[in-house]
Structures are given as structure tokens and as C-alpha cells.
Image (cartoon, rainbow, N blue to C red):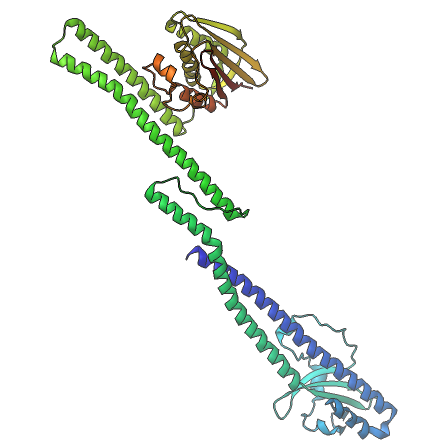
Length: 470
């Protein structure tokens, strides 16, 4: 079953329930009010006739027939139930069984549905009994019996219910028609509302299908200026498309750059192997070819290792968490990188003991990549200054060099994979452009940040922030 049909059914069912409840309650109130009012009228006429008979017993016939104008029949019974007098319109009313009237509980003239509604009138302080009879024409008759004031018998007041029954039945048919019409309208309106509500979702579905087929993430869904949930869904969907577009373009650039970086060493290795296979060069040329092939193989191995590390990072592989002495680790990195110097001066301007919780190998790779870059891109007469400070719950590592610097337009992109600024590419043709990307990932995995500021010809500053262990 489709969501559209389910929404229409839910909306239609709920509306139908409300319509049935309102119409049923309206019928109950309407019906109960009419019959209660009739009982009050019948009780009032009986009380009036009883009072008149008590004051003017000699005019009994005139008093009994006075009720003809109100359509009420009056009958006088002795204590044994025998008729002692009656109005002319009471002749068609069947005889009243006094024993049954006095022993059978109250019989309501309205239906069980009407009995659920509260009465709109005050309760009658009646000293008699209400009941129901059926006349010779099959019509219902409301009967009220109360004792005469002198105790000689009973006064029976009757009132036909045909006109009220007809009105109540007509009202019931009207309510049934309203319920049926309301059901049709509710389900029709529910279907229309469901279609309109789900229209943006249909558009999103079609857009997703089109993107899946064409792989064109540049498409967008019109979200308008609405503030409802569907408009927010459309904006979220567009944001997701923008993210997918960036990721797809980054993947394309990544694959292209990786292919280029891997092709260069393979070309060099293949050329040297061809030279060795031909055995046309001198022994010195062969030694040079072997050295070049070995260097390119090592470079390719480092590149593959870096790619594997980034692939594990993208897959969300967790890192180890253990206490690491940050100051000792940075000093260890500086000691290992001293052999890369070509006249540059390495200075430690400040060092404060700091302990962070993380993966020692990943943190070491972070500092190796940053400081190695600083050495490579600094002239032999330049200086690289490293400092470690501690403030609050954070440790800060600052690496500042006086190297060639980076152009302002290239600074925001230095942490992209395979990106190398032009001056850096000239000084380090063997680099892969993955070092700073790995450094950024390592810092983020440890809950820290890495930032860079640089000016051409003035040098570069790398600012690393890491949370310390408790």
C-alpha cells in the first residue's frame, strides 16, 4: 500500500470518526430533548387536570375534554383499574394495566443512542409513572399515570408520539446522509491533501532517480521560501547534493592525481629496467639505473602507504588511545630529521611538558610531515623554530620557518590531497602532496586542529592544537 493511500485512509478514517461522533451526538441531544419536553408537557397537563377535578368534581366531563385542544387524552380509573370516565380522544388508546404500570420500571421513549446524551431539562418531581403503549393504528403512545388527590383512583394522561417519532426519524435520516456525505468528502479530501503533501517528496524521488542515472550531482530541487518540514527537507536534500558533488569531484581529482603520481615512478622504473635488460650501457650506467629504480620504488612504496593510511581514515578505522608525552615525541622527531638539513638551523624556542591521549605513531607522523616540509622549503641559510606550550586543557605546537612561503590563494588548499603549491613543487619534485592531508587527519582524530599562515618570501607558520589528557 502506497504512502499516499495510507495517508488518505488515515485522514479519511479520522475525519469519519469525528463526523460520526458529532452527528450521533447531535441526534442524541435532539431526540432526547424532544421526548423530555413531551414528558414535561404530559406531566403538566395531568397535574392541571388532577387539580381541576379536585376543585370541581361536578364538571368532570368538561375538565376531561378540555385537554382535547392539546391533543392529550385523559382517563379516570378506579383502584381496580376500571374506567370511570375519559375524554373523547382517549377511546382509541388501549386499556392500561395498572399492575404492570406500577411494577414495571420506567420505559424511555427514545433510543439507546439518545439515552447517552444528558437531559437539557431539570428532573421532574413526578409522583406518577411513565410508560409506553401502542394504539390500534400501530402508533406509539406516551402514558403517564398518577394517583388522584382524593385517593379514589388514578388519572391516566396519554399523548401520541407519532409526530415526534416522525420528526426524530427524519432527523436521523438527515444525520445518516450527512455521515455518508462526510465520509465521501473526507476520503476525497484526504486523497487530495495526501497528493499535495507528497508532491515535494515525489519531486525529490524523481530528482534522486535522475541523479542516480546521470551521476550529475549539480542538479538541485526547488525549495522555495517555505518554512515547513518539506521545505527544510528540500533544502537538506540540496545540501546533501552539494556535499556529494564536492565529494565526487574530490574523488575524481584524487584518482587523477594518484594515477599521475603512480605513473611517474613506474615510468622511471620501467625505463631503467629496459636499459638493464638491453645491457648496452657501461657498468656505471647500470649502477645508476639500479639506483634510480630503487629510489622510485621506495617513493612509490611511500605513496602507496600514504594512500592506504588515508583510505583507512576515510573508512573510519579507529586509532589507539594511550598517554603520549608530547614534548618527548617532538624532540624525537627533531632528532630524526636532523639528517635532512642542508645548512638550515633548527631551534626549540620553548618546551613545556604535555601529555595527550592518542596514537603515538599517528602523532609522530603528524609532526614528521610538518617539520619535514619546513626543512625542505627553507633555504640553507634559513631557520626553523619549534615551540611547545601548554595552556589550560590544550597543548600548542608552533612550527615557524623562514622559507619560500606560499601564495595567499594557495594557503586554503594546502591540506587538500595531492595539492602542491608551485614553489614547493619546484623544490620537491619527489613529493606526493599527501603529507599535510595526513597531518590534518591525524590532528582531527585526536580532537585537535592544524592551521597554516604563510607569505611568499617570508616563511610559513603552522599552528597545531591538541587537547591534553586529564
